[in-house]
Amino acid sequence: LRGARMALEEANARGGYRGKPFVLVEHNDQALWGASSNEFVKLAYDDKVWAMLGSIDGSSTHIALRVTLKSEVPIVNTGSTDPTLTETRIPWIFRCVPDDRQQSYALADVVFKRERLTRVAGLRSSDRYGRVGIAEFRDAARRLGHPLVLELLYNIGEKDFRPLLERLKAARVQGVVIWGDAREAGLILLQMRQLGLQAKVFGADRVATPELLAVAGPAAEGLIATYPYDPTRNDPVFGQFVLNFQQRFGEPLSPFAAYAYDGMNLLVSAIQKAGLNRARIRDALAALKEYDGVTGRIVFDLTHNNVAPLALATVNRGRFLFRPAPAR
Image 1 (cartoon, rainbow, N blue to C red):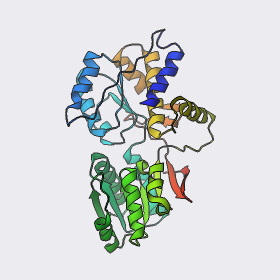
Image 2 (cartoon, rainbow, N blue to C red):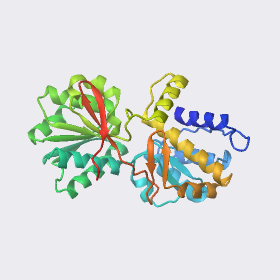
Image 3 (cartoon, rainbow, N blue to C red):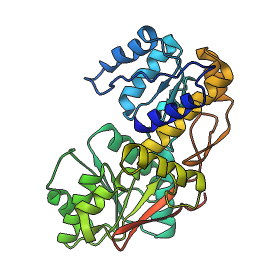
């Protein structure tokens, strides 16, 4: 939300749209299953927005997509990594953050080609994020000739993972891929090492956070996770953005904020080019093949997904070190 606000503040400081300020209309999509459709209907027909930014939640975005079939409101998604969003082939959504399929390909290359592991298990959270993400990695592993030895799920908020970890230990796994949030991943790492399970651990981008380091401590050493971009790269534009963000909000930058900033700037640029017409805004977004944002170069494929190269984050001496993911 703060990344989006910052982008609009800067756009309005430049004059807005032909002298009129851009206005951010905020709605909460975290409702009971199906109820979020009411929020999207309000946005489209009551608030009469020209475009939408969001959402973090894949399920709510799927609902929003069905609303766009009637309302024809373009959506720029900056947070949900669910690959099935664009598989609907509904032509009103664009995604500037790399999805789970891109992350799975990168992880599979590291796990099976670089590390040369053969006995690998998947641990995933019980929500849609974990289910969809590990399914993509499972498919990538199978294509490389290494089906997962085990696939286990855990509940969000769970604290005792020892029963699951004992199963991994009995299966003699060489590697574990975690698809979930940082807190549970940190506890899994901590309890793995306490049980003497020395398998290598890998994860998707949500585990590569300071929270994981705080929870796992030294047990996080050696963890390898995907990351959507390299936050340590020598890029003066990105460096200035990080400084401006921290000064404006008094907190460190997160990938969610960075991609929301880029996504909102994509929308502002499309509106400036197309005018106040939803279909033309959509067409202006569809015409983009590449975009240089603060997160780096965004490369859109034919399904309007960002397929730019990812980064890898490795825990070394208690901090994350970043490097480009292997080229495919």
